[in-house]
Image (tube, rainbow, N blue to C red):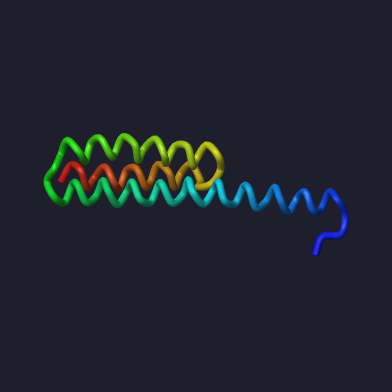
Length: 85
């Protein structure tokens, strides 16, 4: 366990950041599932709307270094392909 005040503060900061990162990455995954489900159902309007929200969430995750920028581009591209077909 941490002994110094600065080490205790680091533990608190890491817990806060981990919770924030977890919520953002979970939101990204949920929006991807919603987008793919709407595309499977044939509801193009809802699929486009949720894809826009999904792309925004992915970009935010990439900006905050939760995922790599290339992975963000890869995930958006693969999801977009499902909307087209």
